Length: 230
Ligand SMILES: Cc1cc2nc3c(=O)[nH]c(=O)nc-3n(C[C@H](O)[C@H](O)[C@H](O)COP(=O)(O)O)c2cc1C
Image 1 (cartoon, rainbow, N blue to C red):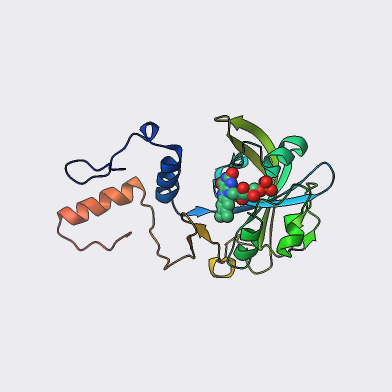
Image 2 (image 1 turned 60 degrees about the vertical axis):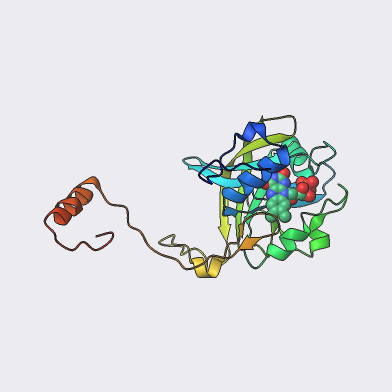
């Protein structure tokens, strides 16, 4: 594939390229993505767990999380999709350095009757308000109820879920100020292919009010030194 213009700028119409190429591009460019390790319950009681990086929070009032669930290469739906459809409940564990390797074990396409929990040697604890259990080793768990499942193609469903309970291991969320200790949390990001990332150097960038921004502009015009974010 050759998609550079005369200036060397990469430029394609995503609808004019192969599905695999589109996958490589959007997954390689829309990074970093958090990873949801999702537990669900099959109607026979099997606990299913699988990671999904088409995942994020899209609203806080109500708290809404989104998952992009694809079909398997043979066209069949994944256990997670089937279980969410049938039971309406699931638990999202944000993948951290502590659990990323075991979460990756859960991505193997085991037969439906095999619980990834056993294979990955995770342990379970009851959730607070939903039936699917919570992974005990996961630092953070979001208990969810499905709001809608929207098919965007024959193979992909976008699931909106309301977060109905938020739990975190001691030391991650300050229970009074609700500050998150990011160093204790250590979330992992999905990049592309087999690449993942830990958080790098952190930096602060304060958002200015419009008045502060105008004051900063005026100070610059007066030739006064302006501290970034001041
Ligand atoms: C880091 C990571 C991210 C993934 N993200 C997705 C995703 O966003 N959507 C998807 O359909 N599959 C995704 N997968 C693949 C599923 O985890 C895999 O198909 C899994 O076997 C599905 O399990 P289930 O049939 O038990 O639901 C991802 C795999 C990994 C390792």
